[in-house]
Image 1 (cartoon, rainbow, N blue to C red):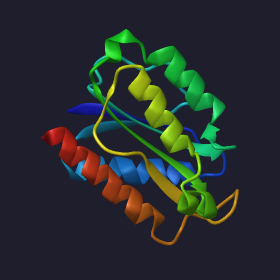
Image 2: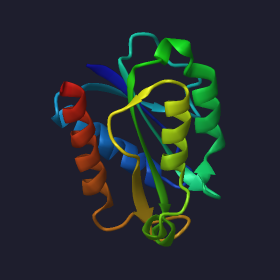
Image 3: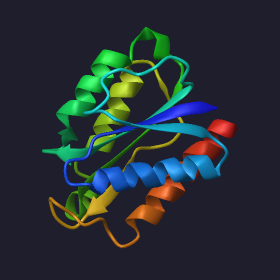
Length: 152
């Protein structure tokens, strides 16, 4: 299947996460394009699935990702598979507090897309990072899990 990993990153941690998720998807046999929500405003036709990620800002999704979803995910996406990921402060992840990944998961579900797995939160040690020591490998594993779910 062909899909897109859409992300935004302010300090680079969510970009590292997005690239690792993409690697995991590719390792599981999926064809994937990496799209920065801030740089590219439109989603090309032909994608069969979406994986969307954002850093957490006050428990919510960042503005560029919110705008990207609002502009690009309409009725034509209903029923298509998706997964959500994001970065959040370590203590917020551990406590199960609201995160961008959970926010994206809820938003895309409400728009009629079909989740292939639960949202993935990748911990960072501070607002500017860095990712947890196993963060990139955890993101790669998440990508493989999503890819295997898509393959059926």
